[in-house]
Length: 105
Image: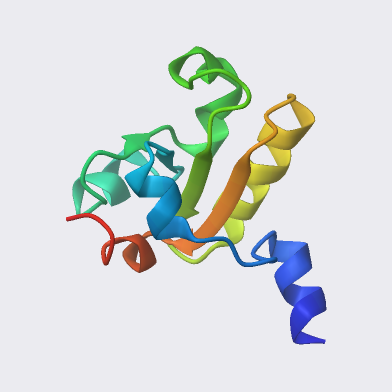
């Protein structure tokens, strides 16, 4: 049951987020501008989920690693699914942005 929920949210299987970040992955925070301004992962880029389709040029090539994050994991899961449908092949959902602060901040 837990694995099914993780699959729906796009959280599994586990990848080494720290290694991806150390190797230059893009951290994409899909929260609103106000949420992002109240705290975010250093070096992340903010493109709110509802604006993502109009800002794909801000992302590197479609094979470059992207780690999505938001407040709870729901929007970042949607962003991951959207990016996959657009042809991005190396997208990972970190869930809440605060989980990434252990790697950078």
